[in-house]
Image 1 (cartoon, rainbow, N blue to C red):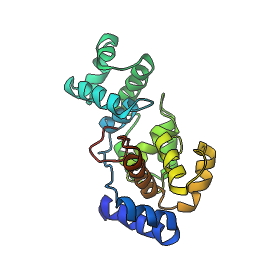
Image 2: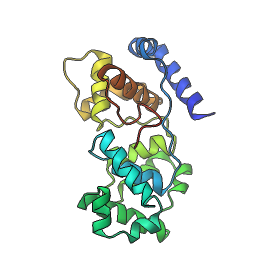
Image 3: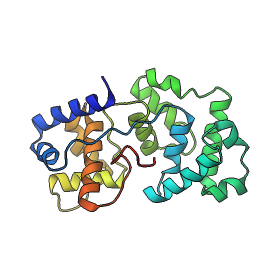
Image 4: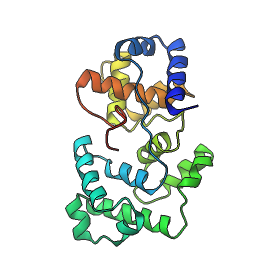
Length: 215
């Protein structure tokens, strides 16, 4: 099954049991899946997108790509001045180098995570410096195709839940986890839909709302 077919299947299943999702689909239509090839380039893209706007991430990613930094060997060879000019903070320099080193020395096989149990894949990712729940879940969703991920640390997704359910205020990550548990095992489909809802309602480009957006 293609990613688009899997996404459509998940949304159809959710619409059958959640009238708000059914109404949302009628309003904005089915989103397209965001797909990244598993490996160093995908994860470094997601690290770039940590806690910055989509526009800022896109600009940094463009400079990194032009410099050849999507290759772990090239990235590991960059000095602080080069990474700083690209747009990396001191913290993200450390995270990127740690990732590149583990990929290069063979202690981390990102491609092998595609066949791993989701819990094991998540544990392997969050063991890396600078990789928290949000980064690991975004990688699992976009690169590994995990169908049951909802990154509640994502502000746009929490706002999407508020919009969808007409809540008086944006839920906390913990409240969002509780509210979205009923959407299992199709939470990734719900996340794609709510990113699209946020983009349509707010007019702001956000991660996951369009397959061409930078991660």
